Amino acid sequence: MAVPLTVDEALARVLARARPLETEQVALTEAAGRVLAEAAVAAVDLPGFPSSAMDGFALRCADTPGSLRVVGHVAAGQPAARALRAGEAMSIATGGVVPEGADAVLQIELAETDGELVRMGDAVAPGANVRPRGGDIAAGARVLRAGMLLSPSRLAALASAGIAEPRCARRPRVTIVSTGTELRPPGEPLAAGQIYESNGLMLESLIAGGGAVVERTAPVADDEQAHRTALERALTADVVVTSGGVSVGRHDLVRQTLADLGAEEDFWGVAMRPGKPLSFSVRGTTLVFGLPGNPVSALVSGLLFVLPALRALQGLANPAPRFRLGLLAAPASRRPERDDYQRAVLEERDGTVVLRPGTGQESHMIAHAAAADALVHIPRGEGELVAGATVRYLPLDTAGSA
Ligand code: AMP
Ligand code: MG
Image (cartoon, rainbow, N blue to C red; front, top):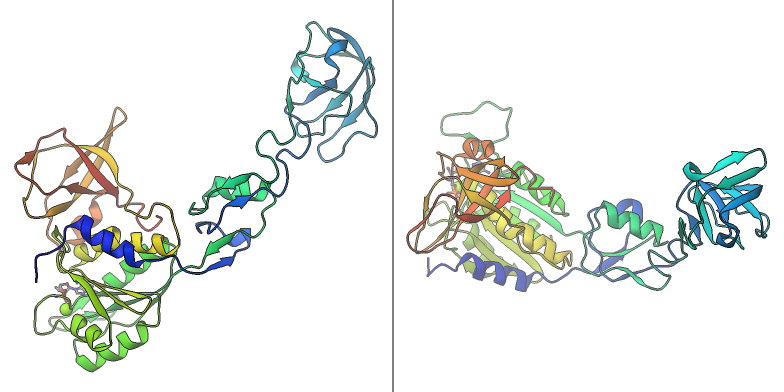
């Protein structure tokens, strides 16, 4: 392995290759979690009319304080039949159209009613409890920028502004290929030397959560022809994610097979633990991630490189991993030559996140990793991080809903 890239260098190279995919119009009902490919422009004013913020009485401020005759009722969705005249009020529901002639709404709690009359002790200020037309956003104005993920509030904003089919990048198609003669599907009996296949399942859930359409092949034996057949088919996807077979053993066939199939290797080897033997190749527009087979290495590489690539392919403005900040519970030694990503338990103390890396940090220990809440970044460098030092972490319990 040549001098490995740093994690940041490797990520920059991945993102440089992950150009946004072509776009399509998406029905709003299908758009949750998608990424806007162009700015969304309001088709209507929001609110679309002067709208009452309260249940109460629409009136003219000039008539207050005093006693007014209630001449009608305005329900939401049913504007008043006529304009309001001097000395009149209309009862009105929240969201009702404030009738022409009225310039304020008196909330019901401040009103005294007596038969056909409504009375108030204080003057009502102009515009009180009236939401002006276009006060949230005006027709023609930008509601959301290109590159924004359609979260629940953003979906609601698009719906409210009359945008029924936003334009989004299409979802990346990802094929996952697990390699290893030793792999058996969970549920089947194991012969000597065999293990249960876990990476495919893990990566499928991670990658589907990253917005991709995922296909997963049956585990591929460590055999040249089997590799060739599986990878040749997989290379029609936008992204291929393999696990296993990228180290230097005689049964590690992924890189050579990819090269034989015309994929160009961009890099192999990242100065990190776990996950060092990661390989990244490109064939045409297809990106290929060769993840190491050890499950924790595959997980960490998936979080640090594959998910960001999927975000970039979908045109997300900020595709890099979403690190948060917390405090180390105990000292941690740094390595001059590599970044460490340690599995840790997360506790909240007085609103502060405290991270405690545990035992069992080896890259095959998926059961230990599963008990952790967070992946803590111990940056490469000299000396030690003291207890209480601020570190970056990725939550592990929500990974896959990124
Ligand atoms: P490799 O990268 O192929 O040398 O595999 C490294 C280690 O990870 C070996 O112990 C493999 O048995 C294990 N491994 C490889 N692929 C998987 C997988 N899909 N699921 C679980 N363990 C795996
Ligand atoms: Mg293997």
